[in-house]
Length: 114
Image (tube, rainbow, N blue to C red; front, side, top):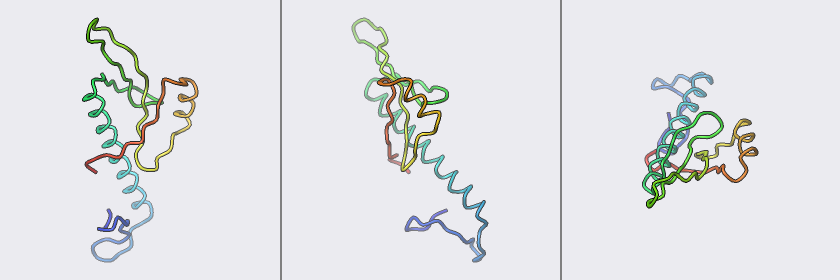
């Protein structure tokens, strides 16, 4: 939990100090919620822009395709990795980025409702 200024609260309601493991668990859960909100925000923006967004497996978050209005064929646009805050890419994401060269983009997204 955080106070009004954004600092982590290190004591409970009775003034007792919280264990470091519990504080770490709460921070990780908060980061997970923030990342999920950023992914949802990006997915909504991409769909509004006319992309078909598909959730993928490991190494990246989304696969984007755009449909041609005349022929109806799908045009592959690439893979997207969404990051929020000061998050860094993992080793697997770095490896995937090197393999895919121009088709892989990392997007920093700050969620609107977080």
